[in-house]
Amino acid sequence: MSAAARTGTNQIPFLRTSNVLWDQIDLSKLDEMHVPESELPQKVLTPGDLLVCEGGEIGRAAIWDGQVERVTFQNHLHRLRPKRDDVLPRFYVFFLQSAFTQLGIFEGAGIKTTIPNLSRNRLAALEVPHPDLPEQAAIVDLLARVREAGDLQEKLGATSEELKRSVMSEVFSRGLRGESQRDSAIGSVPSGWSVNRLDESADVISTRMAYSQLEAQVPTESSDAVKVLGIKVSDMNRLGNEVELSNAALEVDLELETAKKYCAPPGTIIFPKRGAAIATNKKRIAPTWTVFDPNVIGVRVRPGLDQRFLFHWFQAFDLRTITEPGPTPQLNKKNLVPLLIPVPPTVEEQEEIARVLDTLDEKVAVHREKAAMVAALFQSLLYKFMTGEHRFDELHQTAA
Image 1 (tube, rainbow, N blue to C red):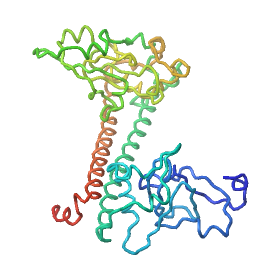
Image 2 (image 1 turned 90 degrees about the horizontal axis):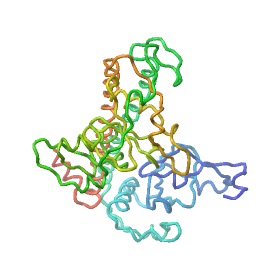
Image 3 (image 1 turned 120 degrees about the vertical axis):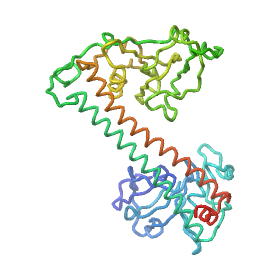
Image 4 (image 1 turned 30 degrees about the vertical axis):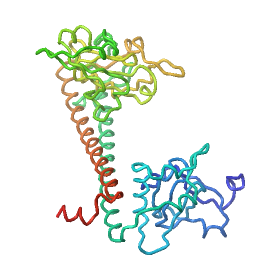
């Protein structure tokens, strides 16, 4: 990318390795460079070209389908075109995905230098399967349909999340009945609501038992035993834990009296105290008794404030606005205690708002679960087709 290429008159968009994802071309950010008109016939992509990453995530591949007229490509991408009529390029996108992400059969194909790369000669020398054209087409069609179903669930989940953000913005400024508004220290709120410090309505807590102590506990078989979760920040990222932390690496059955004395009670709202989890603005709610590691802090309401209402309000709140600045942002008790929160006048109204927002959370969770199930199905089918464990004709006969 010389200065002349940057400033030349014949600016042509080009693809980088960052634009080529698995079976997808991302055009959200497209760079340009000067390409002499005489060189374009050799360098411009045509629909159906197979692009394979030489660097970055080596082997990552997708098909160019002509979304933009006159696009070329950087030299860290390989462009492949069929030499024969019985080759469907997209079949080899799927094969390369399986080979590089599942099978490990091309682990030696990347040259290990400062930046791992897949050279032209090594790519050309790779041995690949070659089913007949009808089977290639059938496999591509099925895998593409499964991938599209997963993409649809991802989009529906994202749409549901956006809907919830919109509803929260409306509810916390106008209530459920569109009542008049008043200005407050936290912006517009319904005129009948109060604005209180958090410590007027809730307690910021840690647990009296350390995470390491819970690990050392001997599980009880008593009839009044309760499940206790040990919560680390990493548990907030587990699938299914986007709202309620029902899935943790550490679970121990303890006496109920022990849990009451040393653990955070069910319904506690959990926050990360430091690091990347603050940047991603995670908050979760514990459905059972919990013990925190030192990087976690909790909030528990007092009578007069509904716990799930407060949780939903926190979902709309950006923790980064109250963290202590520095190389590693920190959220401590002193940051949470003076925080101003909106409080509807009755617990019944709070519960009604919480139910509405719970329903939207459930809708998001359903789409996430379906997306995860479809992704698992795609990975299973990809592996079985590309290893020959399933042949399409056999699968079709079984389904029939």
